[in-house]
Image (cartoon, rainbow, N blue to C red):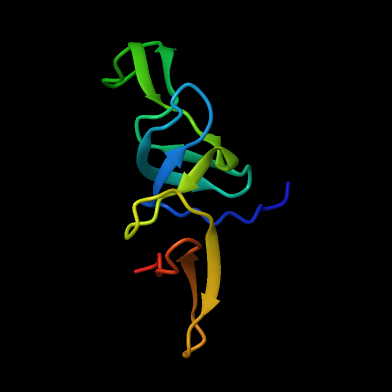
Amino acid sequence: MEKVKCRIKKNDKVKVLAGKDRGKIRNVLSVDRKHNRVMVENVNMVKRHQKPGPQSRQGGIIEGEAPIDASNVMLVCAKCAKPTRIGNKRLEDGKKVRICSKCKEHLDA
């Protein structure tokens, strides 16, 4: 499978657009570019039944986040605090940065 171009990065603040957690604004924990999925903090919580294992692995019902598709989240701009599309811009020194499409502010610190 080919890597998909994903403009969302770890620790970005995103708004969930679809699913049972629609409307929540949370931070991105990890990005899987190969499968175009993102793991968002306290979104898409699932329960897994786990058997006790050797050496202190406790069994029971474990609750954690599951990845969601990257198309179901939208980046929230830090300056204007609105969900926005992401544009690209080259600086004078040749560095490429992400910009907010609404307020034209740099998203990369």
